[in-house]
Length: 96
Image (cartoon, rainbow, N blue to C red; front, side, top):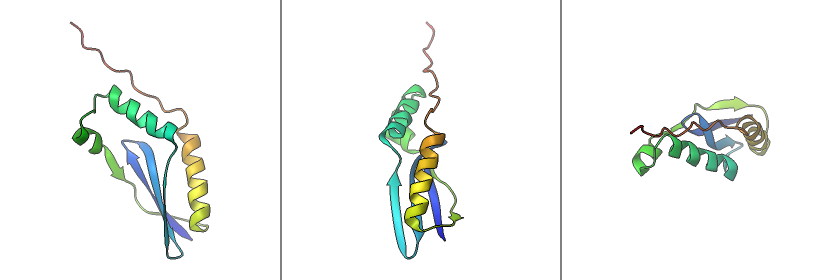
């Protein structure tokens, strides 16, 4: 048995932490997801360091069967598949 927590930027998963058997595994989601987070931030004009960083949050700890390695591998695959096509909002262009 292991437990995991997802670190989100807004609603988009950014990284995971998995604990079990006295070990902690931390993994980032793919560069594609990281790029989508940056594009989302640009579209919403959250470009200052403070505004960008304020969007991060930690999810709750959730238990899951398996070793930490198994949980991390499965969780990353599930999250990558779920967020493969992140909808990036259109940047609002102010009318003149």
